[in-house]
Image 1 (cartoon, each protein chain N blue to C red):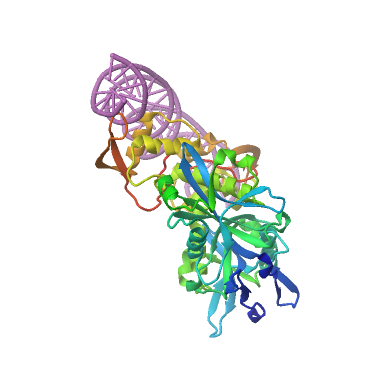
Image 2: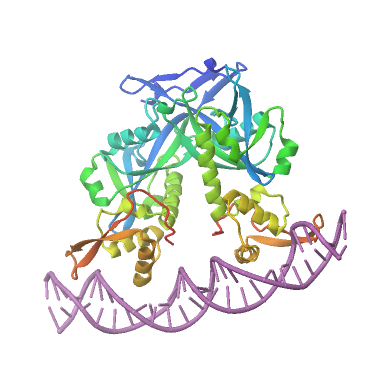
Length: 233
Length: 233
DNA sequence: GCAAAAGTGTTTGGTCTACACCCATGA
DNA sequence: TCATGGGTGTAGACCAAACACTTTTGC
């Protein structure tokens, strides 16, 4: 299908030939599933019938803003409708060429796994453990893109309340601690973790109780609906 | 001259019309001049003979990587040849339209003011105090871009050794403190500042002495040539 | 000798870390 | 009654902030 997108040639102001890369938007969707960070990928077979995984992506249309392009690509490719999104980086290097002259604007997306499981169309996507991505075949430079984005997720976890976008609305403190331990790959002391989080005023009690474990636990929610800087660690 | 760059139309895979924004690269060059953060801008007159300032920018060509495009634009527009550079963000929104359908990939550049003054071609550019940019007329959304980039510079100063790229090779501690005070707009205690910086092992003594002030001062240099994370503040 | 910037320590309060036992519930 | 995860406090080490006087040089 790609032959429909020709390489784009212009004349520059000195009347020389001039070609531009075509802007595309790539989405790295992370969630936490079975105590691991996972990434959402599309699967297809290449010309030799090897399975190749790729990030959801598409060409940016100038009819819409980048965020609107993101929403449209996300929904068309995965059926997921609403997630936390953040622009990460824009890559272009002809030497890594690369998907037919596409410049890739990479977005990070986070989603709570239960919402993901309800919304996603599993005939279109697969969920892959981050720890397994070195063992699968990824489309062009998508492996680098995923690793870079994972690093950015780590940083964001350390100094913002971004954990809220990977958790449900109300949660036990131990679940929050679990998110930090999984993403940062590091254990925390239960008491020290609670003291730190409370001192930041990042979360508040909801006065609801979760009775699904042996001993019932208090439920908390985030104070701030938006991503905000908190010196977490 | 811009009529030579037509709006780019394609057919998508369903044979619908489809247009893309054209990738361009904008450079926000900061330096510190006369105890203020300053930004380097191009000046031109608009159709009503008002002075309009703009960031150095140009269309990205697919012949080169983004960094190579950066170098080429920087040199052609300002005659500056080598600076610290870092990609900041990619903006596209047709509602803020905007420079004839250009998607802007924004880069931050930093340069030590004396190198800037030696290299730059002042027939092409002007240096404007950051505190004055609300009082000048800027090209389309360049005001927002400059403010966003300045914010990112602040953050980088707080947790990396990026100050090295705005200072000369060897410097007095008081000059380093000055850079922090100017960019972060905040005063520090001399003794506490020194203790903090030394504890980080971010800088080292050069055993040279600067005799240009009343009492001579030791000169220091950065340990690391590359930008590296240091929890400065 | 005076103006200007350099250089230098201590005290105090706060924050971080390490660490272990009892509790409430369901099976 | 036992297994599971929830809930809680203290002591010591380390770090951060506040604070002022003496030194070296040029003029």
